[in-house]
Structure formats: structure tokens, C-alpha cells
Image 1 (cartoon, rainbow, N blue to C red):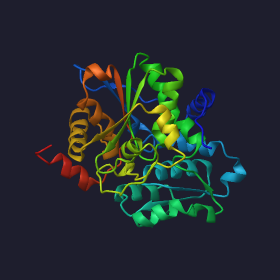
Image 2 (spheres, rainbow, N blue to C red; image 1 turned 90 degrees about the vertical axis):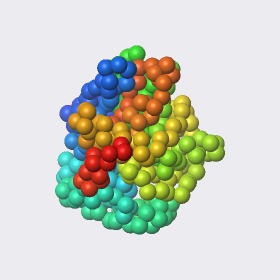
Image 3 (cartoon, rainbow, N blue to C red; image 1 turned 180 degrees about the vertical axis):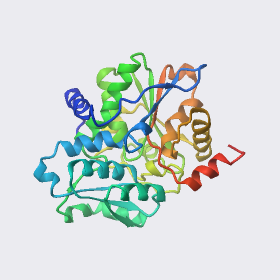
Image 4 (cartoon, rainbow, N blue to C red; image 1 turned 30 degrees about the vertical axis):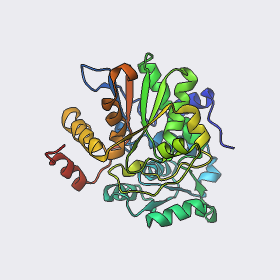
Length: 316
């Protein structure tokens, strides 16, 4: 049975990551409101993923690491694993869907990582069949990994250290690894903090799962938020998410693109679709409900063509 890390594990992860990841700042979104941005795009791999992946790999023995490392990913987990594998001098491989942006594939290749591209349905079959068990390499699960969740939880420690009076934290949701880790850390330190999971209308597996009262799989859709377009909340993750997530929010694809354009032009933050989810939800919600709030900007790897299309769209 999967359980959440205790505070000591998260603090240990923070110490381990001190010279690896960046304590990202909180940036005021607008001088007239109380929304703060936490730009995890400043991390070495342009996403939060390095926190959890590095912590998970660092907790392995060297003998285990030398067997090689493997994962499944829509891009950002693979980037973090490639960086980490290079750091430890070991081989790594990732399975990615054929919907993964070219920019992410190229970035993954830059770390010398082996990339296996599968059709989206094929990747889900690989996931359900636990295809990684046929490999001798150590599998770093992007969600079902306590050390990974502890690493992601360090974001929660930083938020409370920088803004102790925070009332609401908006977090993008894919498979649940990020929000379970951050939400857990926040609740351990202050149970009254409101944790909000945010998904695109095209792939809202957490919203559907909460509505169903159990983890479910939904038909996948094509989304600008490719980094979080995970069509399943697993049975293992559902009770953990139910424990730490207060609200599940859905936003439109167009509103995400509008936020991306705003963050790029006004704040000079180049974000991918998933990275704009939290901010999109926050600016649509009443200040009376959210109070002082933090939005996680989770990733910043986007194809040039998509970026230019959004910036040149006069309707956004």
C-alpha cells in the first residue's frame, strides 16, 4: 500500500537537493492582487521534476543505479532522469508517447538518454502491463514512488518558508506525483492551506475520479497541456490525492493559451501549457476565496511552432 512521506523524509530530501535544485522565488503576478508565481522553469531541466527524480535515484545504492534507470514520461520526467543519470554516470532509458513535443525529444536526447517512442495507446498498455518489469534496469515510477513524492514535497517547504500566510496553492495535475508530494508537505505544516488541483478540460482525470469516488481512466484528448495529459488516476494514487487535495478545477484550452501568452509577454516567463494551468485557475477565481495564493509554474519546454502560434493569435 502506497503511503505519503513523513515530514522528516521531505526535510531530508531538501538537504539532499540543496546543491542540485534551485529554491525558486515567489513572484507577484499583479500588484493589485495576492497571487504569487513559483517558477519551477528555473530548475536545470526547466521543470520541477528534478526534485523528485533526483531524490529517488539518490536513495538507490550505486549497485542499483549501475543496473541502469528507466521511466515512462510525456517528456519532463525523462528530462529529469536523463540529467540525473548523467550526474551519476549511469545509463537511462525512457518510454514516451508519440505525442511528445519535438523540443522535449531533442532535449532528452541531449543527455544521451535512450528514447523509445510508442503510440499513446501502446504506452498505456505498457503501463498497465508493467512492461518495465521485463527490463533489468531500475524503474523510477513517475507517481508511485515515496522518495519522488518527498522530493516534490520540498516545493511545499519553500512556499511556507517564503509566504507563511499562504491560503491557497494551485497545482497542475497529471498522474498525481506532484500534487501528492506538495500537498502532503503543505498539509503537514498547515492543514488549513487549501490545495487545488488544476487540469485542462481535455484531460481531467482527477476531476472525473473525484466525481466517481475512485481512480478511473478516461479517453485521452489532444491538449496544449501535453506535460500533464495523463488519462488515469490509479487505484494507488486516488486515496493519497483524496487525502491532500481540497478542490479539483478544470480550465479551458483557450484560457491556458491566453495565460501562456500573458506570462511570456508580461512576465518574460516562457512556459509550456501544463506550466500555465495553475495560474489560469488562480486568475479565474475570486480573491475572497483564494486569499494569498501560490501558482506552480511547472515546466517550460515548448515547440517553437506552438509558441509562435500562441503569441501571434490576436484572439488570445
